[in-house]
Length: 222
Image (cartoon, rainbow, N blue to C red):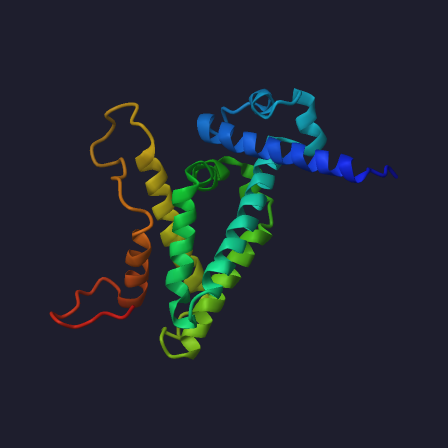
């Protein structure tokens, strides 16, 4: 068994991190399919073969990038909801997620667009970090049901996926709207620009109140 010193382990960890960050930039710049391992290696400042010392394939590199980013997302969301009362946690959760999308557009592009291009990710990967994300959101919804604030007839694991579908689609539309247009295209097919952080209030309003217009002077639920 090979034993690495603390400095060697630190160097390996730093190099792995550098490769992941380089891969994120290359995937966002060129797309997953078009990106080449040689481009990632050059961006990271390592030899082409070095990539394969850390990752089996381009798909494995993409999945490792997803795991790293989702770990960071989950930690940020836990911190966000820990600072607010239970009744405000749903809003805090959604706003924190969309704020991360706003602050890390390159990562958001990889997670919303390029990740779906990997057949290995879509068909073979168990996705434990995303499961943790859904459990956290489901826990917030379950607590709201127990307090009588949310409809208890909707299973929380289903409601969590429904809400994620909304914020994931918003993230996708926001990312696409930021990209430069390469052609006129079909009118109305390109998403319009909008405030992704403010959209958190729209999502919460839709979840809590639906699309029914409130009566004049009637205050809507938060």
